[in-house]
Image 1 (cartoon, rainbow, N blue to C red):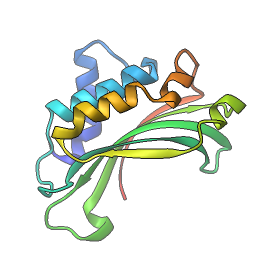
Image 2 (image 1 turned 90 degrees about the horizontal axis):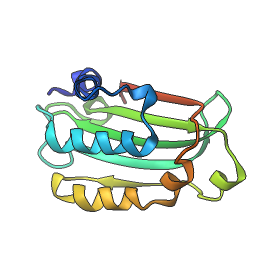
Image 3 (image 1 turned 120 degrees about the vertical axis):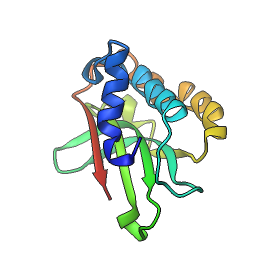
Image 4 (image 1 turned 180 degrees about the horizontal axis):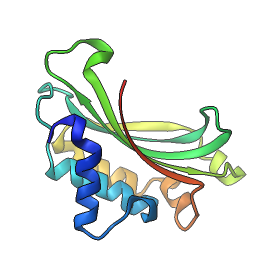
Amino acid sequence: MVPDSAREEFTAWLTAKGLDVQRLAPARGVSEMLDFFRNIRAEGCTSTDGDMLLFQWGIYDWGAGRHFELDVTRQFIALGREDDDAISQLHLTYRFAPTADLHAHGAGNRWCKTIGDAASFDAYIASHPALHAVAGADPVEVSLRYEHV
């Protein structure tokens, strides 16, 4: 897979399993992104930190009001490019109404820089309080987007 096709490839990955990104619970969505990372490797990326995952959570306002976000992002760094021109990202983001309970989880992130770190990264996310806090909650929005930074 080349990074520019990541959104389409991930959508096809889900479709082959009979899944729709808009109907995935956050735990399942994160799990699918992790499996996609493990099984479908990116081509044309730097050998170190060229294909990695980021898990992030917190209350943010990106111009559409405050929401609690739970996000897993696959970041690619292309060979032969420099600085931000080299970076692209596939984001799976869940947005929820910012309740007091969700606010109590603060904001933070954690990176998974290699395939070898995927198992411990998966365990970290699976036990993370922010993921458990949104289990069973209906998101205001689920988005899957690919962008160049």
